[in-house]
Image 1 (spheres, rainbow, N blue to C red):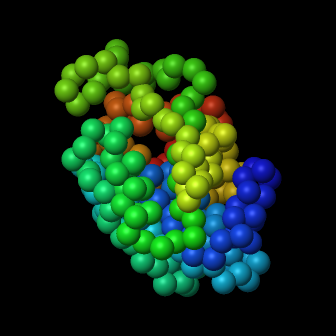
Image 2: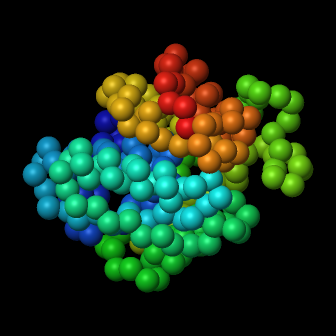
Image 3: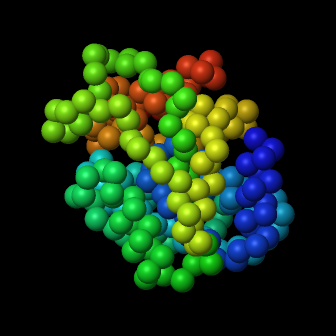
Length: 214
């Protein structure tokens, strides 16, 4: 926890206009909350711009809900931009959004909340084998760390188990309940897709009850 906070403090000291890639999910919501919380506590003047890729899971709707919450909670104006192509294969959606954000906007730095995949094969909480939308077997996303000079993967050295631990330790139940992780449903989570099971695994590892439903 201390390492993540230290990293964020350095970023806030170094960059003024910061772009945040948000999806409406747990990790990007946590990153946005921590940055705004640190800015408020340290009385800093950083400005944030939010970016979301329009994915089939209604990511724009979910991300907008999170951004609105952040704005109200910290009494700060917020702006969200829709970037990238949502009808690409899911492995390319975020990349398309990052590319467009960097090309078309002028933030000093862009921050992603991507985590490393779990170090073990996820238990399937629902049924046999995870499947792609076309029915082929799926063992989870292939997450690759970015080395673009204007993009920092803040949580890359951590898994979702670690980000859930922060939420548990800081008792951020309210933001937890606002987030949407599922890729198999636009609203109530399916509890079958790999992303739902990664979230369930992370909460199990922390012996923490997930009261969110999306």
